[in-house]
Length: 90
Image 1 (cartoon, rainbow, N blue to C red):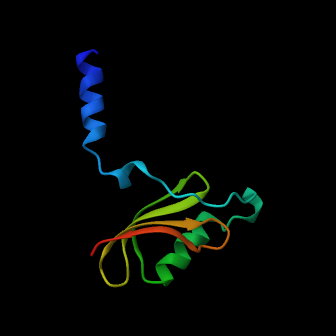
Image 2 (tube, rainbow, N blue to C red):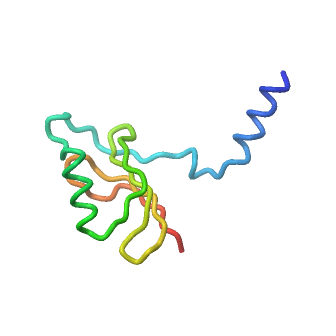
């Protein structure tokens, strides 16, 4: 094993499992997705402060804070905006 490979393997081993796991969102035709701008606006209306909004596979994913000021990483269904997976600071 090369030094670079060993470094990468050790680095990945140090990551928490949650950092390697993503959510499984139902696949909807893109024509049925809530538009990204509309989704962001609805989440802001719900009290989220969004640091980063992105498409992750078939999900919308945000990094930011909820209305209680707790850090969140949340995956949303692209058609319904239902929460599929959430990690919320305790």
